[in-house]
Length: 322
Image (tube, rainbow, N blue to C red; front, side, top):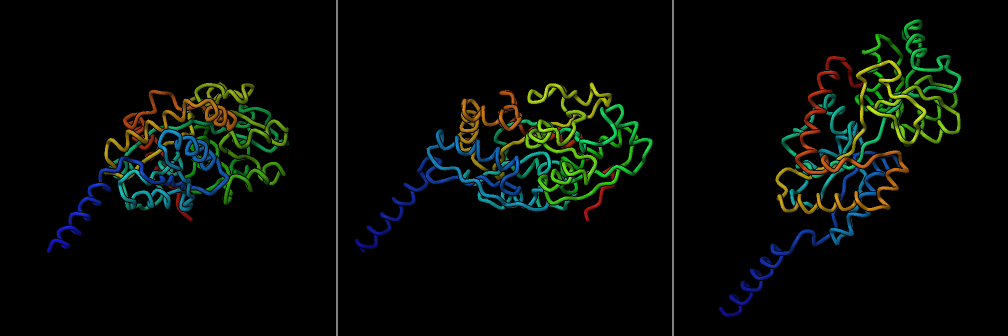
């Protein structure tokens, strides 16, 4: 009997000790819902590498790509709400794809926002010998040649896709969309003159612009992009209202304890003040999310506003998955 009581006491003591362990007591996994090497993967690895300093545990980036990023988001939805699994996300995975796919979760009800991370621009670029030299001429050419321009997309509902759908709707133009598996092959064909136009994340295509292998018509931001200040905003170029920031955020599963979310948030905020992190994101062409957008509540409100803005536009476009 005494042996049984002693064994029970040991089990209870161990269980109590396990429950009392402060978060985090083991590595954290950060799901990246896109392939390795892309801009979201790079942002994730920059931030996660620095978060370990604040958390005292390694943060491991794990790529779970597919279905516009929604496979990775679904993986987060099915994870335990203990803070040991989080996910980076961006416009495509958390706005565009959500209007296209039937999903088992609700973006606003089934996740805990942690923090906004960074904001980078999209821009409209063309092959170097495309006839139009600026945005005014581009619109005129598209109107004079309806449906003739070929435009690269990297997934139905992606930022690159919806950028040009939105642009076409507002300018009364039409074009032929050509699907690619990723930005890299699309850029290869654009530089080779095999495709006419593209609306990629600007940071990863800046080297081609600087090398003169592509031309840029306008950035889809309210102000000029610090990395290419010679390129006008889309507003300045003559298409008011086409503002399309390409942002990244971090989420945890619904039900993650508030103190755990607070620790994750503090680790992100601390990371975003680090000089090395800031420089690496700047080199990528991204701006650090403003401090007022780095709270869980601010990311939640920003995300809701993006869904409210874009889902009606996407659904009205009647885009079909293929």
